[in-house]
Image (cartoon, protein in one colour):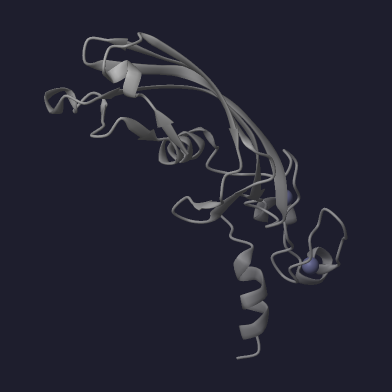
Length: 176
Ligand SMILES: [Zn+2]
Ligand SMILES: [Zn+2]
């Protein structure tokens, strides 16, 4: 998504209001893909003071995330403020995003904002029961007898340091 700031940069206007809605492609956040179930809506304004252009606004969309505990995909409403500043002056580029064009590529800014705002643990719901560490079933839908059979405490395994993706692997290797 490119936003044209030529008039601001040339001093032909001091403020530019935007309300943009567009379909955004999924992106990789460093560990997984984040998908969109609704268009991204950016509202806000750019204002120029000296060699710096500031943007203040809001990003609204709906994301599809993977639950950190049960691995199911779920929808997550995203509605967060965004403040970011730009400059075309190299000397100011330590404090502001440097731009060498009259159009700003906003996709990467939106992606950074989403990554920054999302919690590290992405849960489909606060009390997600996760997967059984022995048989791998989703304990939100079904229960299993592993707790009794293996005589372990499920509560303890709900600790977030447990990675349920290994449950199935463990199952595969247990005969070796
Ligand atoms: Zn979950
Ligand atoms: Zn089980």
